[in-house]
Structures are given as structure tokens and as C-alpha cells.
Length: 151
Image 1 (cartoon, rainbow, N blue to C red):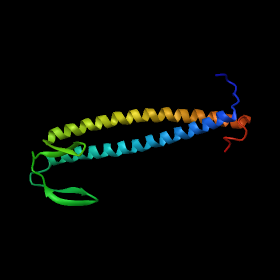
Image 2: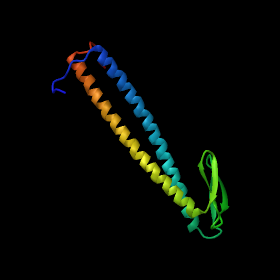
Image 3: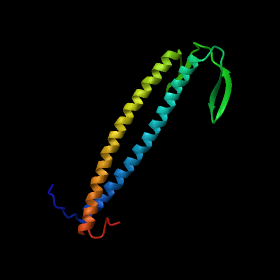
Image 4: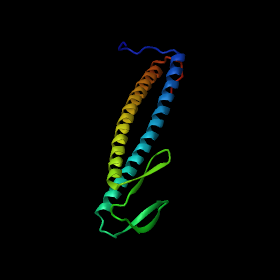
């Protein structure tokens, strides 16, 4: 591409505006996925820490067991008791705590990788948005594409 701005036709400006809108929508969707992954990561870490805390607790120590909706029940956990964990599609299996802790750690690793991949996609989209925005700003300044794209 040459260093001097190239004039855009009104159709090109319209296409760029539609593309810019599509990129922004995609970026918004990726941001929502990012938030879901972040919440999931926090939940998995909290579960792992809770399991490790149960192992460190004195035998017969009283714990608050969360039921959701800010509702808790006082109870005790027998050391070495099996743990129930969801494995997808509504299926729950019973495993020993060490295996569950390992599975949770693996899930956090996969979530971290998915987060990094998402960050890369968001960065690419952001670069495209910036490039198109500059192109449209240049077109508006040079007067190409009539008054379309001026804000």
C-alpha cells in the first residue's frame, strides 16, 4: 500500500462500516466468552482450594457447605470420603479427593489455554478494528465517500 491515503468510494466506505460493525460484534462476543472463562476458572480454583482445605481440617471439624443462592449448611466431612464431580452432560461421578483435585487442576490448565487463545483472537480483532477505524477516519478527512462515515 502507498503511504498517501487512497480515496474510498461510497460503497467501500459502506462495506468498511459494515465490516467494522461485524468486528465489534465479534469482539463483544469474545469478551463475553472471556468473562465466562474467567468465572469458570475462579470456580474451579475455589473448588480445588476447598478440597485441599478439607484435607487440612481437623477430623470432625465443622464446615459451612454452600448450597448456592447464599445458602449454607453446617456439617462435617469425613476425611477420605469420596467426592462427586461433574464430567459433562449432566453426568456426575464419585472419585477420591486426590483424583478430583488433579482433574480440577487439569481443567484450570485447559481454561488458561482457552483464555490465551481468546486473548489472541481479541487482539487480532482489535487490530482490525483500529486499522478500519483509521482508514475510515482518513476517508472522512479527505472527503472521499461523501459524508458517509463521518461522526
